[in-house]
Amino acid sequence: MKVTRRSRRWMRFQNHIFLLLLLVVVGLLAWLSTRYNYQADWTANARNTLSSASTALLERFRGEIKITAYVTEDKLLRKRIAELVGRYQRYYQDIELVFVNPDLEPQRVRDQGITMNGELVIEYGGFSEKLRDPSERGLSNALQRVARGGERRITFLAGHGERAYQGRSGFDISNWAVQLENKGYSLGSLNLIEQPDIPDNISMLVIADPRVDLLVGEVEMIRRYVDGGGNLLWLQDPAAVGGELHGLAPLAESLNIHFQQGIVVDPNVSQLGELLFGSNDPRIALVPSYDSHPITENFNLNTLFPVAGGIDIMEDSTWSSAAFLKTLSNTWLETDEVVGTVSFDIGKDTTGPITLGVALSRPLDKLHGDDIPTSDVLLPDETQQKNGEQRAVVIADGDFLSNAFLGASGNLQLAMNITNWLSSDDELITVPARIAPDTSLELSDTAIAVIGFGFLVVLPLGLLGSGLLIWFRRRRR
Image (cartoon, rainbow, N blue to C red; front, side, top):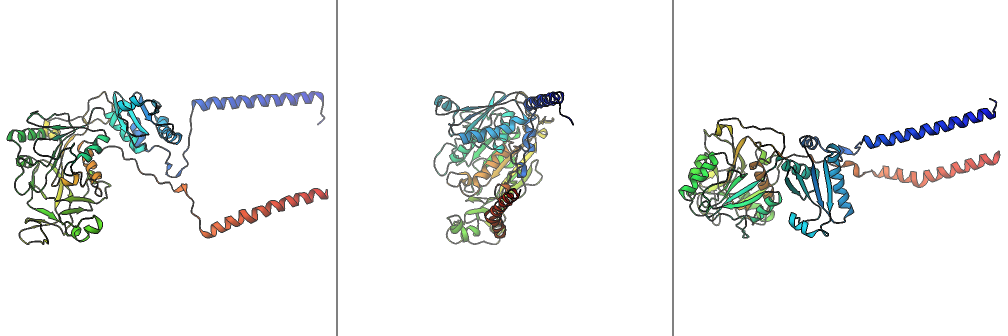
């Protein structure tokens, strides 16, 4: 092809057109990148992507969600929180994340009751929840609780020597109460002499091992509360089980249960207790395994029950009953005083396994004679029934929840599981744990030797050889 002045001008024109079109394409791609977003998670198990349970939860929201993070100028913590919330914002854009430095706004921190760096406050529809665990599971469960709306209240019966939720002795249950408050529950006590009515807007009533007799009228109010569909947690030590329930026998009859006489003796603890638990008291019952029930689903921790009794479930009950806590088969109920060496007496003592805890439930429509709406749309401006059934838990031991034993093995986790089930929070989202197998590389000794030889010997020699070859060829030209 003969190169002329005209052909040169035409080639320059073509180059200018190509450059112009290239710039237009780049500009269009930049504009499209602001309108559309595409991300791919190539990590093992897609651990940087929300689970299907979390994305399904976000589809139920209508309106703005505001998340306030109380974080100091800690760049790593702020980045971690921003990345977590960003995963939710990609599926639901109406989420606002605001960072507040608690050192600069102490009054706001006091008003909100913030106690730790990195704590989140989630607000939606006039309700709020605090979150100390900035993880997908924690944030998704907090979003579900705030979407439900309303205040979750737990009321403790008082005035009869019960274990106090504000008491500090080893007998009391204040440590458990602190955990409940951290989970967003509102706690209060109820003396039926001062307030002769049990509120119907509480999540559950707790009867924590009364020590003196209740009045007939008080027992009747409790029975009316249960007959009306109220949830109940009843802790009853065997010290009162030997026949005297301090006036609560009619309540046991309503629940179709019977407290057995005696104290559980566990030879497993007497043999290995000093080594495993720091005590060889045979009156400490060990529960290492559990029957299938929502309370103990995926729960595999040992639990300890000091000075526990036994419970019988009566037949022909209107309740659906499940014995979710049982001792080992070689235990028994000792009817005599447990002093020194004890042994099983045939015909007098009751052989194990002994039922320590019973979970009861029944449909609410059987109480009221109508259908209870059970919509699963979680909108705070709608009135809905959280669960279509009434629930109760009875445990023949109160010490396992006491300040002295709550920290033993899995006692605290079991207590929180019971609370979640009774307050219908057992439906909270379960986000599967995601392992990260691609964060580390394990090589055999042979592979390490090959890679080391390649980088330290083969690669340098290859570069040197190629350089010499190029130099030699150029010199021959």
